[in-house]
Image (cartoon, rainbow, N blue to C red; front, side, top):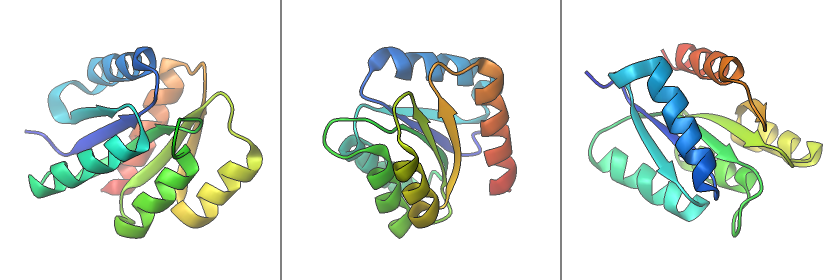
Length: 132
């Protein structure tokens, strides 16, 4: 049984592949793992999942992406879907962007690149507990 979806958004395929591989290794088939290469694609995937009545539990997004940065993406998501838990994964986010996401998108956590598997698992487990 799938309990919901975890959406990862990053403009680098190697990051998306790594996140998906690590999440599947740790959480197995309990969740659906979706990836998007930018914020626009992320929003489309959210709409598709919700149409299929699949709950999005967590979004892990890069901050620095072409088009819409991660903080702006999470603010848009939060305005429409406030219950989705939101996390930024970044090597370059400034404190201003993180604080903006905390204030306007209810940002749950921040992971810094390069992340460790333990950090990723801990933040995802905490986010899943928040969602229960």
